[in-house]
Length: 112
Image (cartoon, rainbow, N blue to C red; front, side):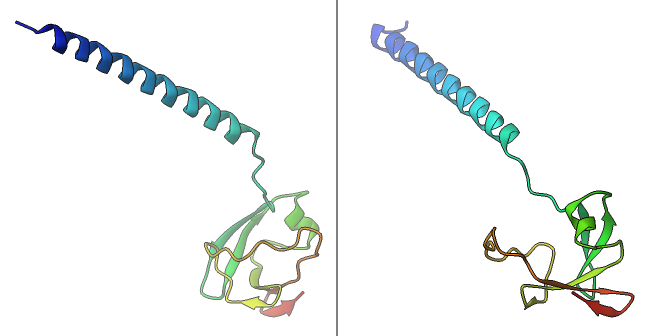
């Protein structure tokens, strides 16, 4: 036989679980909406790590990467004087108003 106290405890537990589930759903919807509104920065280049540095595998037409003069096969050597660039390593964010300085190699010739 179930005691009256156990019955109330079960109901309170069920209501609490329902409220927590609803809160989780609301936060998931808010998170999804924020992700849809965020524009991921993209240079239009598919990058890959190589022995020489980060190599441009594909440069999209009419992209910022193409406008900067990058071509497929170019190897990024430095950004703002920082050598040893690797694809998965992020440095401090540059000043958005400043023009980034980068060096790359094309056909074993250094370029800026």
